[in-house]
Image 1: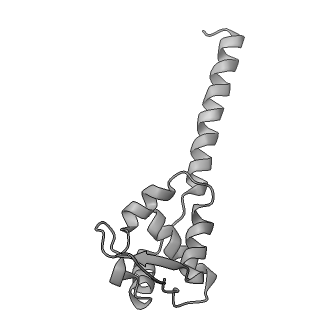
Image 2: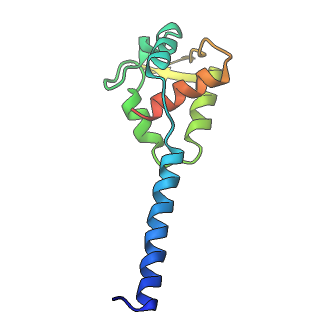
Length: 117
């Protein structure tokens, strides 16, 4: 049988692992893939972006990699797709398209979809 000190340490480690798993699960967000893809298509995102291949813009996979682990990833990407910043394509500056919805839940779903690729 383990000593009380050993058992206490074992329970501390076990609790920490369980807590960490719970935090990760809570941070993982469910994505409505069909809704995100439909919004991307109607907003003309797919003209310049794809899931895994570079077009005029970066792939969603590259975008997800760029923001991985960054606390402000969702906020930054949300601002990008809702404000229409200036971007450069082949050296030419133009206005980025704005997502064609005002629904915050639909926008968040699209952002989480992009970041989860």
